[in-house]
Image (cartoon, rainbow, N blue to C red; front, side, top):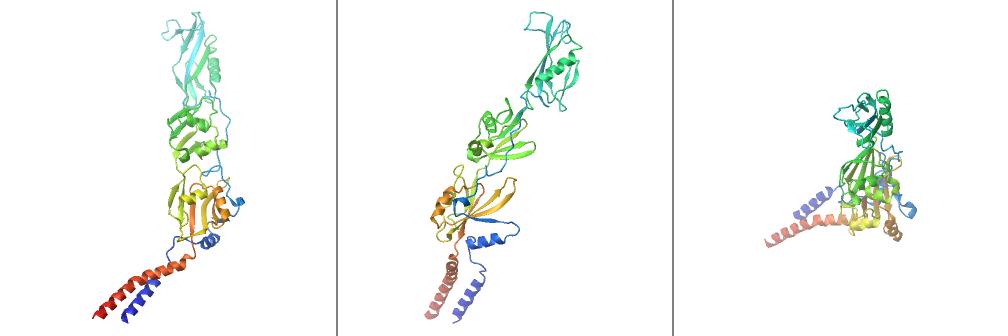
Length: 380
């Protein structure tokens, strides 16, 4: 009799210690109730029952905007850091190439021995946008084209030399270039030859990307603003392939897309996208489907942040009932996005069975002890 009392007291103590039953997550009704009661983070619940309920796909998942195309500047416009080669041609009385000047050269363009050409040392445009030309002094050239600089130097020398002719070429282009980095074959400085190259063009000029396009993100920094676009979106959506602009910084980063599986599914883990885009049906299959012992096929949820045109994020929960035949067609049209959370709801009908399992787990060892004690007593 004492043994039975001990068994009962132990059983009740074990049940009292179980404040909640073990579970893999909330049920459908618990999620809907919690979303409606959430005040600090307003959550919208969308029940996907027809094609009209399917989420609209943004241009790309990482951001909803890209810079607009800017009017391309002239390819020969000079900026700070550019290096200029300056040659000055003179006839008659010369200013730079007098007789006996070791640096003087006879012009190959004329048989007139009085025509001389002097090539000045390379001139780098300083941070203030100036260069120094002998007899002309400091000249402000930033923002001007090579033709305008030629006329500027010529005008500064006209009173000192007899009809000087000037040619200016760009030896090193710094301002009319972009910086390429990350997962490209040839990272470094890339000169824009036409100023009409698109982002996909500059990637090709840098030797192409390394790795898989679906895993790469192009990060663009322009005028202290950041923009992101996936490489596969850049290829399939021409409206995203904007022109590169001098001064841009372009970095290709490896950021594979993935989604997280939680709840009563076949597995709980983070899964990568098998292709550039996958449907909800494919995601369910990759996750192993609903656990037949725990999950509720009518309680399948997708948790997602949706960003509007202003960049504001809104948490939305999409619910789809896989007990309805039409849902399997909708799941094929439902596109998964990066960082989605796929949740398999816990079946509410499993709670009584879990209670019985818990009681059974508590009873089994105690009944074994009771049987052993009675066997010992009977043997005595």
